[in-house]
Image 1 (spheres, rainbow, N blue to C red):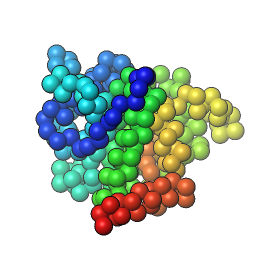
Image 2: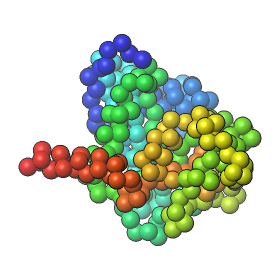
Image 3: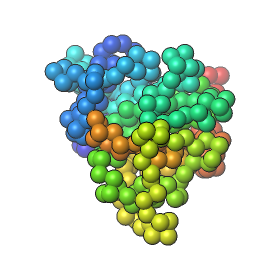
Length: 265
């Protein structure tokens, strides 16, 4: 953690330098730290990228004290794909793992989230808080109703993950009308421990912080896990319906919307 909190800038990526810096950060986290890989990963240039990058908005957290010329200035990133843009290109990224028919049928305003990460030197500070505030503004400005995306457990040993996966399945499964499922050819059940045998404490300890944060906001999971051997992860589908958020967290979004209107006026 940094000794002094830097003065961050938060924006959508404005040029190729911002995008390359975001991909460099993603490489450091998803490839160097977590052992991931992919067909378009550039190991020589240390860039984690894929064919969807040109279609997403990239919310980047910038530390102005770091070098843009060295692609070192982006210290946090969120990748965002609104539903209308997904419709134009024919699919969401996560449709490579999950059947999103319930979401498409809903007719709601959708937003896919992905590739969320923070530079290791900035974890434990306010970096993620700034990113979440930026995400809230993005959601409000576009009247997004449903946020979703794939989140990951490190590793592909299902037996080692049976307790947290069973906890998600038994206590946080999405409502049936919005419950997406892993594609049949890749379906890995999360019903691995009987409900009355789930150790909630052990499950939460083993659950990544980002997944727990979405659960606190009232998020749910889809049915089944996807074992992503290329990225060395076990993926779960996270879904947050803003209409079903707890009053506490919906109030947070409402207050931000009121502040936006005051500034606009």
